[in-house]
Length: 386
Image 1 (cartoon, rainbow, N blue to C red):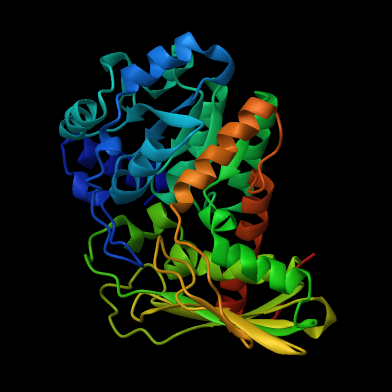
Image 2 (image 1 turned 45 degrees about the vertical axis):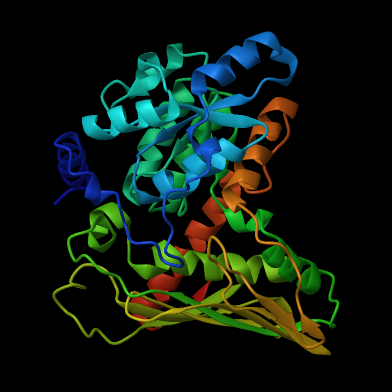
């Protein structure tokens, strides 16, 4: 069946109020809606403050797709942001629209469904659109948002093919709009320390990287197990964090990939996407990075072994509770709301007309690597990256 068919099914289900299709399991922590009163900050109040101080106004963000991540992470993060705020929503579920309107005091004129989405072009309250839909829908809604004149953030993975990434980048460039990928860990202190230790060779040149990002997936009917919607299995969902981790620890891109699929223990659940995938990335100077990503294991680790020591995060990729250690002792960094820092930075990029540190081009690079991992696993051959 075609991608358009699966998208229609998805949109029809959300329109009927089956919001659970977007409520995917949280891979790393049991997150619940914040009880912080700031989470219910008034959109109208922010809009009025913006009118009174246009020079320093907060930029309005519209969330497209109100699933678990938007509900439990992005909306609370926007309530804490200094440079942006939740201005609007796009959802196919009327019940969710009413709930969000009341909780965040969002006016009717800032609420859209998937059919009226393009009318967002006429809304000056909304500066930035954040696409939080199933992977195969990212390209369509980023392109439509850019054509509507909005700056765009898309969740990872950026799309389900390099070609889609190219179309998204081109659409944003043509519209003179900025494009960023939701790579929140570039703003998280422990992962930033991995970047510093590796790229500055604090323990000497890195020789080997290893790690994993896996969780035991639940509901067999969720979109993450539908290849047309997800584009793949755990590699696309969480394995991408391993790819990111290797690249930003070294500050380099891989030159070759080898990979294999793991054992399938539940053929019915994993009849469309992989259950487990194991791969190795080769980097310049003989450095290798070995990872596993699975929907039937638990683990979230990133480790680097260098000439004169080692450093690691375990857990490495979650929304909170990250821990780090080096051969000289434990890391001591605060837990932060990664998404707040991520979205505030993009708002400043828009305001100051500078490029994001996690741009669409980075998302395209990662999609190219993910594609190579799948090719290597499917063919059993080493895939060269040029």
